[in-house]
Length: 210
Image 1 (cartoon, rainbow, N blue to C red):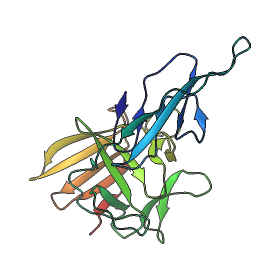
Image 2 (image 1 turned 180 degrees about the vertical axis):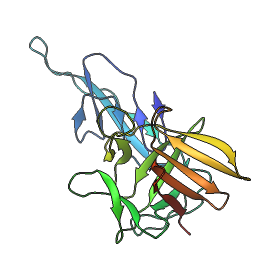
Image 3 (image 1 turned 90 degrees about the vertical axis):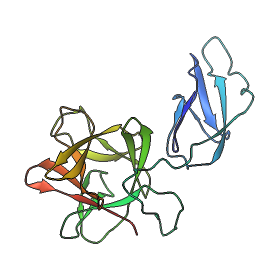
């Protein structure tokens, strides 16, 4: 079993399906889009087959998700109009205040001058992160991972890795889905400005919520 602040992975059982609070059942043993520091009750049961009936659900397993493990360089708090105590929330915006937002129809991430909803940087340890959108869903990528893969909002996260270097007297952090891709997010100073880069001419920054 493994867990973070927003996901729980149960021990896999061949032929089983899993439920959170007995509401719906799924084949995957991993549950995403959970809330930090929250108790959830999970169940497993064997699926019905041609030869066997569905088994009764297992005894309940209650798991407390981790406390906030947000991006340590983003001290802001707040989302969905609700002020929260955990850190790790940040806007992703251009230098001229255009927001980094997913399309409501396609989920593909682009730019929006009128909507300012934050992302949450969940630290998984070892400088690795999930990036979660305030309206739900994770910052991920479309299709095969390559430098022109579309960045999207997905029900399943990808892991972003932080690389740090000293750039011109200040520390720069790059968050990459893989070392061979050109998509990354980086801080530009200790003042917590991050940038999204697809190419040298396409730069975005993240501003912390205050």
